[in-house]
Length: 213
Image 1 (cartoon, rainbow, N blue to C red):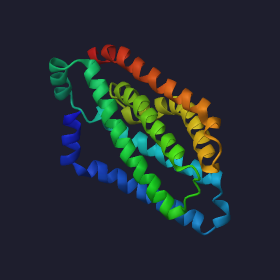
Image 2: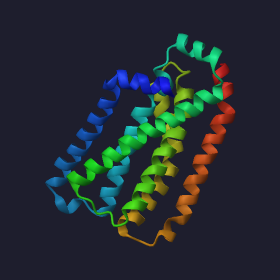
Image 3: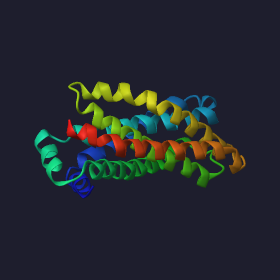
Image 4: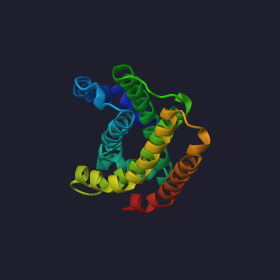
């Protein structure tokens, strides 16, 4: 994890590139919806935000294992356990996604307005989304890195896994935007927590087999 943080600090173009992607996407949405203000209803505002976060997470986490060359992976194989590798990648990607998601939400709310009535609950949904995207996509990135056309495989494998989670996140955040009682989002909250725990557990158990290949 420290290695990834040091590399990210030295090679700031990767993180700055993701910030540029978020900023340009939000600005394009502003140009598109600003000319027709009646189009940007609350459901559209919510859906567009999660679409931006989804593609940001895919682009940010795709490089988790794809940026590692064969020699470096062989060196890691000799000094650390596979469980340590996958957990460190998940924690690092979670921190990265949290920063990007919060920056995206703040910039998005400033540019396109902020209709959220229950901000803490909405931030909780962003937190769960960042953790969910990171845990799922990190393992998928490890699988895709073993293939030749890893970028395409990453996209193909990620969307069937992410879509059910994305639907629950959209519903939970919509409840927060409307200011509904927090108990209405309790089922989605428990389901998202369960999915995150299951994905982390499965990654912890199965990654050693992928690592040995």
